[in-house]
Image: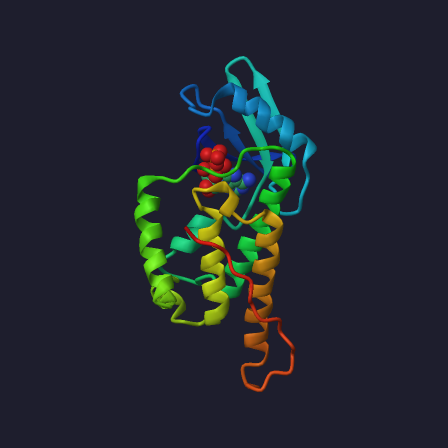
Length: 217
Ligand SMILES: Nc1ncnc2c1ncn2[C@@H]1O[C@H](COP(=O)(O)OP(=O)(O)OP(=O)(O)O)[C@@H](O)[C@H]1O
């Protein structure tokens, strides 16, 4: 069964003994190619992290080139974000995923793996729109409307600012991954507290306010 398709080629569902695995076959026309395959195997064999899918093996025999990963039963993030029906991810869950992803990126930076794609024309257009909304304090229009405003506005604004700063064209304006993780963790704390003290507006939880400011181009 085909699970999906990425830059290397198709990904199939399989078994090793009784364990489910995902087999990513390198297609002959793959634009990521053999060099990238070898680089990825080298990194994934040495890097282990709870937020990184584990590489359980690989095959590099003649024209048969494949990665074998542990099977992720809950599917991919994009499907969850774009899902029309069913459960949508809460703001808090999204923040946690972003923070965990940032931690992985941090790990990838430490291991010298390139991670961030350059901006596209579509992105330039979209980022201008986001900046206008941010300037107008109009973040409800930016955040997924299916959340119906069920998130803390301060945490929402800060998350968007962090995201925008991360994709600044000028590298000196981009925050470090440590800063990203710290800021997103603050956003999570605010969101968690908002839920915890929903019936107690006079919160005494001493949540740190978000004062730091990123420069956004
Ligand atoms: N370990 C896995 N467990 C379950 N499904 C997976 C797994 N790995 C990949 N898939 C499925 O296959 C699809 C393609 O994955 P793949 O990693 O090739 O693409 P990608 O995320 O675009 O990465 P890239 O193109 O950078 O290799 C995913 O979106 C997912 O649906």
